[in-house]
Structure formats: C-alpha cells, structure tokens
Image (cartoon, rainbow, N blue to C red; front, side):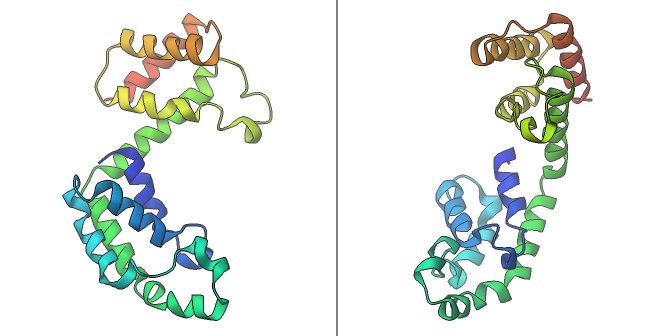
Length: 184
C-alpha cells in the first residue's frame, strides 16, 4: 500500500459533520483508481456500493435545498462508524503506521537539517511546506534501501535541477546519514 493511499484513507476517518473531507467523492475516486489493483480495499468498495455511491457529494451541496441535502446524507452519517471500522481494519492489516512515521520523519529531516535555501528561519509557518514536494520522492527512494551515494545524488539533483542552488556537501552528508538511520 503506497503512502498516498494511506493518507487518503486516514483523511476518510474525519467526521462528516466537519465537512473538511468529501467522503463520497473520495470513496468514488478510490474505487476508480484502485478497484482493479488493490484487493485489500474490497470491503471499502462493498461499503460504497451498499447505497452510499448514489448520495450527493459535498461539492454538490450548493445545488441542493439544505434540508433535502442533509436528509439524503443520513444513510452515510448513520453508517460512518462502519466506514471507520473498515478503514481502521485495512490500515491495521498493513504497515501503514510505520510508513506514515517514516514519511513524517523524512519531512522533519528535510525541513530541519537539509533546508538548502534557508527558509526555516523565515516565519516557519509560512514556509513549512517548502520542501513537501521532495518528501515523497525521497520516501520512495528510501524504501528501496538506497546506499548513501544514491541518496546524496537524489538530494543534490533536487538542489541543482529543481531548486537551483549548489547546496552544501557537508549538510547533505549529515542529512543522508539521518535518512539512512531511518531504515534501521
């Protein structure tokens, strides 16, 4: 199970009343993307096709009379605990927590130790997502058990080709050591 799928499943655990996640749309999207390649999701798809797939998506709310919209979603809100149990079961039967922890650790290392353009010292809340685009590719490489030169080349390529800086060999070496330590 890949990290993007794990994060999608985790977001489906958000209570429907918050309206932060369009559960119906996301379930339909997951079916479109993974119905033929991931048997572990079959219980989720069975849940979806037990009448949930025909319910209006959150983005369609503006087109509905509010009372009718809320009434139409009652089957979903009443069965949300079932959805939650299915997702938790899927996640528990994978190494999802370990992968999420690894992903988050990579994110922290890239932010705290790599920071090739020095944005960490500039209002961290505004710049915190600066290296997000590089976490996934670094994660994917790290789970393939690279050696230090492969990781170093990966980060150096990002510095030169994507970010447009020369980078610092010493800083990058420290980052590579920390990333490799995550594999143990």
